[in-house]
Length: 224
Ligand code: UTP
Image (cartoon, rainbow, N blue to C red; front, side):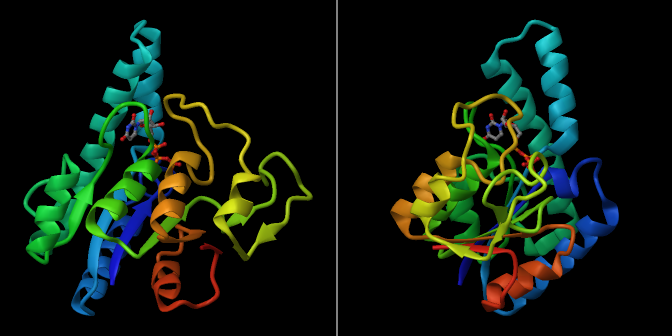
């Protein structure tokens, strides 16, 4: 199966969690051995947000703030790529075509951000579209999608399974802002819906959830 793993910067890079990154590397190697083609998209996490705020304080515009955040995400991607060693391509993929080329060599693609104005969720969806991915698994700092933001509402209820249309009703913020944080970017959802890519959102602090999601076991929230 062609699988895109989107590992939240909030999970693996806030700050860089060496133990978790090592576990993710082992899991990606295992999946590749099983014959899956894997693309890993990582975010810049708190380090990216720190740089975004520095860029803002310097009076830089939104595009510049995004460019800085992309560089940070690519730095985290490079760490992960080096940890994977020769199962991964030699360099972090900077374009969708880079990703497709790397995958065609049966190696693991690792990338961060792509271009200003989007999030790494959108990157994950775009790369799934570009390489014909069937499944996007997002490992994040919540254990799934709730009917409202669980950090703001104590009565929020976790949803086990929903359609892409149901998901649109859950969103509050849709305008892009540097460093914005939602359970999944609505722009990514549009692409996934159009291309019928299944999405599973799981607690990324437990990397074994990724394996469970791929096996189709009941974990996190499934959107299709
Ligand atoms: P994300 O918010 O997508 O990454 O990117 P993250 O750290 O993994 O997020 P969480 O915390 O796990 O959800 C951080 C910021 O980088 C810029 C945007 O400003 C985005 O909000 N970015 C990222 C881009 O402009 N383009 C990209 O392709 C990727």
